[in-house]
Image (cartoon, rainbow, N blue to C red; front, side, top):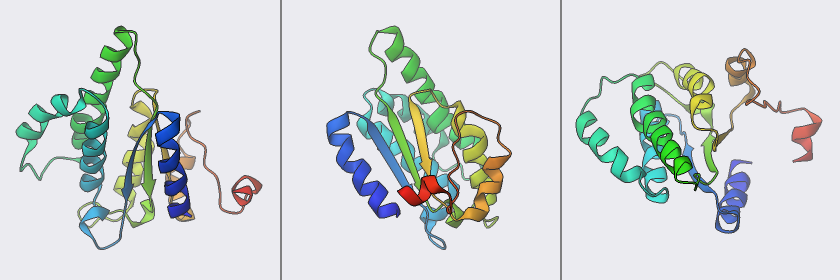
Length: 170
């Protein structure tokens, strides 16, 4: 499923003028870490959104080697703050940012310092909705992680359960 989604979205980024960053969690590997997700998304977005790399350089220098930063701190410093500043600057100049899509695959395989997927899923559920409105996320996971999102009362979340008609049509 994830490969099909990613291939279709990648093909559409070329014609639909939107930016996509992706992160594939893999249990037991470094990329399973929540920290790796945040830094990977930031790096991919910096390569595609003019001005973001420049905004991230001082942050990267300041945070280099700080392994004790919380997921919330990393999210704020590498995603929320720079994207918000960039979005505000672009909007004030009359040329808003293009739509940005974040694809997070296999959230249930995420980990944060040996604590499993829950801290990373909570970060995604609590904090990703605070990103600028042009940023949307698609998250794939096994059903047991949906408990984190069902308690999240937000019009920005659409959880598609595996056995629903909406999912089966895909």
